[in-house]
Amino acid sequence: MRHELLDREWMYRVEGYRRAFELVDGYVDAFVEGLRSGRSMGVERIDVNRVLLLGMGGSGIVCDVAAEILSSKGIVAQVSKEYTAPPGEWDLIIAVSYSGNTSETLNSLLQFLDRGDRVVAVTSDGRLARLGERLGFKVIRVRSGIQPRYAFPDMLGGILGYLENLGLDLERINLDEIRGFQERLKRDKGVDENPAKEAAIRISKSHPIIYVYREVRLPGYRLKCELNENAKLLCHYAEIPEALHNDIEAIPRDGLIIAPRSFREPYEISKTIEALSRLLGEDRVLELRASSKSYFEEIIELFMLSDYISLYTSILRGVNPLILHR
Image (cartoon, rainbow, N blue to C red; front, side, top):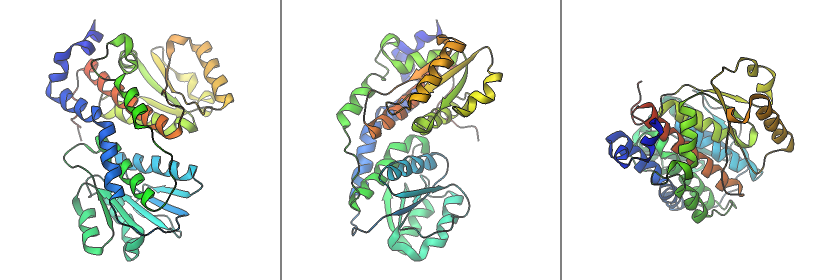
């Protein structure tokens, strides 16, 4: 059977898979290193009530997660993924571009270059880093030489470390719990005890349809992007309950509903997913859960789960997760 490939160690020595799994296995360490980089920025504490984050693609989802964390602390946070930044007064502008050369982010940043004391960049290098050096705004450096989507933990850690320096009271992170969850996802765990491998097997044989709600919107979107880019697999993505009023009528026979779940899930959403399982059959609904009951740790665990699922799916589909055809 094809899924036996997931338990064969030689598969992980194939160059593309080997490097991809090295990067994902280093997820927590990369996040910790990002925290160190952010915390190393010497800053004066300022009042931060309104934050604008600029970023596209893989860097943009880092902005989305940071904005959600800031919003949970009562801070107005907006993400811009355009060529020009939205109007408004901002206490802090965070520009995120892994390459440092993202045209939309650089163009949006131009209008804030006279506010260098309120600008911070997160990047590996490029024009964004050069601008920071020339104009004197803070630049949080992350490791270079990898695909931007694999630098998610580095960049998020950098932002959170910097925000701590500003005096924001962020949630304490239990790294041991996150590492424990990750151990269950690694390649040395057999299919029967590895939820990421089990999910990949079901996804590789189906037409994946990711249904999310507010509390798991970002992990669900991450899974969509990683299945697209790593596994080269097209999948549908929609939010419930809205999706149940339209596209549910067009679910194909091989459609598999993938439902990330949260301990913060509203009662109405829980009942909706239960009804969906009864309607379609439990074998056509795949639930994805973290182990943590902490908001931030749950988000990180669901993101890690998405990354591992996409890599195992890439093996089953026989595609290189590192190569992008664009």
